[in-house]
Length: 280
Ligand SMILES: NC(=O)c1ccc[n+]([C@@H]2O[C@H](COP(=O)([O-])OP(=O)(O)OC[C@H]3O[C@@H](n4cnc5c(N)ncnc54)[C@H](OP(=O)(O)O)[C@@H]3O)[C@@H](O)[C@H]2O)c1
Image (cartoon, rainbow, N blue to C red; front, side, top):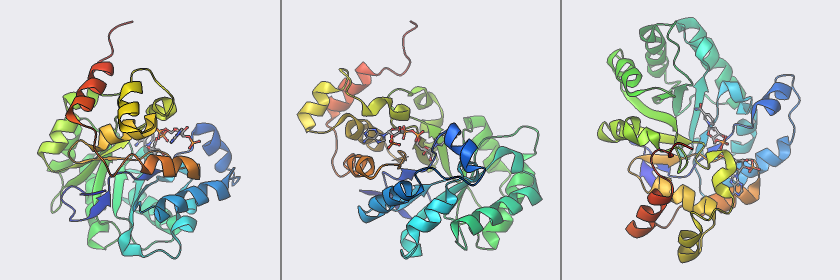
């Protein structure tokens, strides 16, 4: 299933693919050693074959070259490629250099979404956004996003944009991390900002059998991962980006879309996974 991606005018699959392979993997990848490269590329291709058009990467993930290999031969305008600039590269010239590196790694002339990975209070957001808009004017970025920004930081970032708007906000959001529903999620929904839910499976936790989901899984004949993802994408404007490092997981995760949990299922899940975990 697809949804309108914020105000971009683009139609994007509500389940995408994340390409963060964890810190130990990145530490090795930094030295040019890519463990499991062909399996990872195969997984992304399996998702594309299954109809996914949204891929999330970042300069900090060292996975942009895999994305380049996986999307080779696909129609560019059917893909929605999102990458991120690291928080130390938010000065004007640094951002432009980082974007050029990402475009080279991705073997693309533009990205559909360029996101600030984390806020950095020591670099004026106005300077960062000036570089972003210059790159938009040059056609190298189609939309601007933020990640790990609070509501106030998002409002400030939006206010310094001269001729565009924040299109997307990437946040940690899942059944086991619902506190974002108190502020950033409603803010985005009210302002037409797409939400990219990262850690949508609670970093793997929600893909395991869990008594709190058992009845809903049984009633819908779905796996825990599919129920956890469907709960997310049943929310207005929310897209989920589970990690794609094994083809069989990507195919299973795709089954989290194309159907809807009933209102009773959603209520039951939200009772079992409360907004805030009670103090232990
Ligand atoms: N903006 C940010 O600061 C930020 C931070 C973290 C992550 N992200 C983005 O969000 C994406 C997702 O985060 P994540 O990868 O850490 O967490 P996640 O998607 O919540 O969970 C990934 C874990 O779940 C497993 N998994 C996925 N589908 C499964 C299935 N059907 N059955 C069993 N296990 C399954 C994966 O195993 P396999 O790998 O073996 O398939 C992996 O261990 C990242 O790839 C990245 O693009 C963004």
